[in-house]
Image: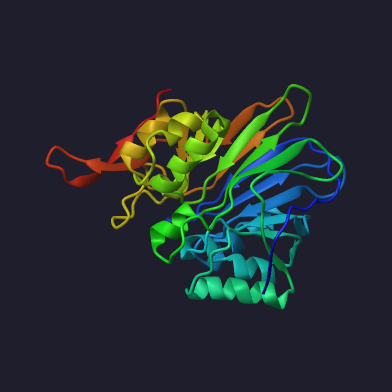
Length: 313
């Protein structure tokens, strides 16, 4: 496996609408970002790969009909619930992978081994991106700003991998005076959240946020306020009695500024969440209206139980 730190330029693109699909991966993460081009295929970014082949296998063919290339694949960190389907994407999807970004942490789990083997078999390169803003050749319509590129918390414990997640902001500028930002946070927890707030402060502000770690309450309390998102998206089953995500204490902090959408609604229905940003910067989300969702929090006796949140009309 070849590893390098690199900032690269990708092919000339011209954009119309942007679509972000937060895939129903139950208690896992997988996201597909597609930015339309004036001609040819959209520019496609896949962020994480759920915890099994089906998370991408059931979605990529429909989402990428007629689209042969994933221009950028981002592995936020090497846990099973983010790595599971990436070997399928590389080996079996029929899509060409042009670039892969990761945070530099390797893991001993089979899912990461399968991913690494697929990378090697296709002679791909794992790139640890620089913590800077990357422009893509020939256009100023979008850039990617990397706030964290990993390896700040050495070790093999879950919290170390989570806090080493690649954190980046997609800056979408399809027309003069139109700017929409989307922040992708992997599974960062309290330590990385605090570091990001200390280093970047109000620069973290984003219109859209992928809520870290499935809505875990292991968060730095000031992080949601600094992000101040208008729309917050949670990849979580809402029904997992072990992890008990998302936590009410966490989502309440995003709810101060954002409409919250979960991939599992309070009816127990699992679904993708589709976000469209048009050339005027207008953001729309499906399903609509905003469904009720589950949260977990302590009851009067201090026992963590599940309850339903109904968003305001």
